[in-house]
Length: 523
Image 1 (tube, rainbow, N blue to C red):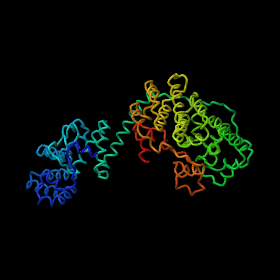
Image 2 (cartoon, rainbow, N blue to C red):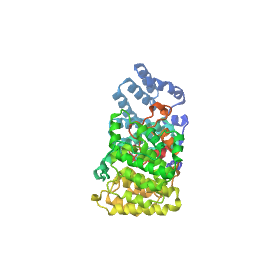
Image 3 (cartoon, rainbow, N blue to C red):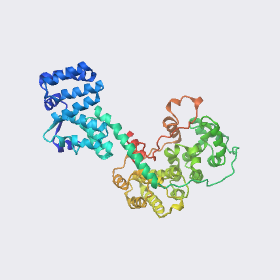
Image 4 (cartoon, rainbow, N blue to C red):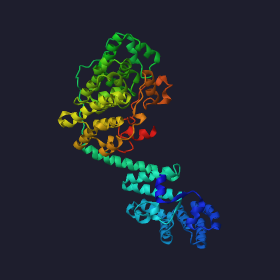
């Protein structure tokens, strides 16, 4: 931003004397300006009369008239205040704050077309005062606060952001800088909602179905290891000692037991759903057993169980949401990573299976991209995987029930994490076909620009052992608030509105994926 100011050939001052000189305030009056401003803020007949007397004494000082406008505003006579603002602009065209007051009046009346008539078409302070080489900080922040609000109102977010960057550079903690941020966020939200409405008109999705219509049961299966029962009795705050005992069970019997747990989540789905519906709160200590099974299998690197896990992810959306919830956007990628390092073809077949729910497929995509990030020597293999996926989708028809705009947007975002510019031709084709949800990954121009940017460290997600992962989930995830960690008697997973997942569109409405927008800004 410093280069920007050099380009415009003006300096920014914090010296009050510079502002006094610009506003024509004589020295003897300057000493009283603070007291007069306090009078203006109080309003009232007496203070207005006092200000009028000073204006008569110093008719060439526009700031006194500005104080009078403030006093009338505080007294409740808005029209009188606005009348004075118009006179200030007529009598003192070089007084910036007079112009700003009038411009803000037009803003309040939503007469946005009149604002450039007052402060210039370019909305640049030096364009308005080309002969000045110095501006006080309060003039610059006030001017750009107006400019940002104006551009947000007319939907020119790029122009608003460029001015906001200026404020952040010169005065990050100034009230004007802080005040305009909500306007930018509101404008993004408004634009995002409008964009979402347009996107939904052409959005393509698939219907999930029950791939295995099995006979439902109500009795728990018989396990080889009696310790497996603990997974039905403890939520994700299960004691470390119990987990250690289970992990040390003979692999030959443990893996089959864990696979049987996954089958049980399918066979007794209706039973547990009825149980949950009867309960005021979702009894987490009785509903976490399939999550336990997946994470333990991941810890064991039991790749032979991958097909069993994928079988649960083939089920309808309601089923997956019931058992896994937030894990579908935050946590399943990790055990899948451990199980699928040498099973990329299996993952490809799953992703290209018809009627698979969006977030089940996207977690697979995330898993594969993480393989490329954690194992750079395999990046070429991962790129080929995504290329095969994209080419298959580009050649499919809507009747195939595999074209999913949301998933494609998420998969492209995962490719962006990899900085796999080799895939731009395939990505471009998907955009040309209208298959991409731009609310997730942006337009093709956005993708093309971002894919050449340096890779960020936080794109590579942390791989944890099962104990640390459980602690991370229960200590930081929304359904497990930190304040409840000490309350063993209330060990339950509440049904709450989900926070945005990494693959979700950012709630700010920017049109970008959450991890590439507000989540990145928090990191």
